[in-house]
Each structure stands twice: as C-alpha cells, then as structure tokens.
Length: 160
Image (cartoon, rainbow, N blue to C red; front, top):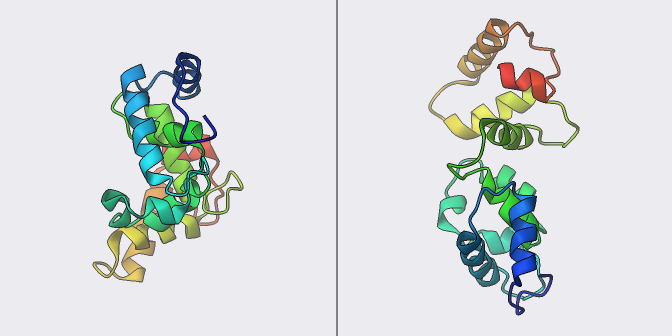
C-alpha cells in the first residue's frame, strides 16, 4: 500500500475499511485508491497539499488552507480516513470530530474564540464586518454557556 504503483490486496482493502469504520464499501475503497494514485504524481505513497490542489472542489473551498494542513503528507489509509468524514455514512460524532480538527488550527485539542473567529472569517470573507463576527460568536458561545475566554475541548465544542 505504500507504493502507489502496487495494487491493493484484499487484506489491504479490509484493513482500510476497518481503519475508516466501514464508511466505504470495498469497491469504493478501490475507486479511492485509483484516485489517490492519480493525485500522488511522484508515486511516493503520500499526497502533498500541492498535489491535492488539483482537486477543484478543495481548491475553491473557503477552508482549503485549513484542509490542506490536515492533508499534507497523507498515505492512502489516512486519505480514506480523511474523506470518510464527508461520507453520508459517517456518524454525527465522526463529522463533529473532523470539524473540531478543522477549527483546532494548532492541534492542541482546544478551540479558542480566535480559532472560531478565524474560521468564521474564512467562511464569510468581506460579507460581514469583524465586529459583527465577534458579536455573533460571543452570542453563540453565551447561548451554549461559554464565554469569549473559554477553551473548548471536543465535548464542549459539540455543545456549541
């Protein structure tokens, strides 16, 4: 599985299925492997953020820089696990965990007011002012029982 020129064995497919909690069927994993091989232009068994830029859906995503940070250097198994959060078969918990990682820009397991503000800024661009963004976030946090200076761990983040 490390060398993209090799084919997946049945064992590899089952291992990847297990790794992504059976979010994808075996045929879907084979299709994802073919796409992975197309993206892995140098055949090294890993996808760089630059290689992932060739996927138009990610290149135009307002959160692309955050996603690319999560993608850089993924092997095939990690690639499938990353994509599993986008599957309709992923559980709500899997989706929340993925989104938490998007917000947790430094990977310390905590989301700050500024992390939330950065993502909101990425999503809204110039459509609302910085003051409006801060007001909205402050209100959302207060509604969930948190303050501007709260550090949200995954369980807190799920409540917001």
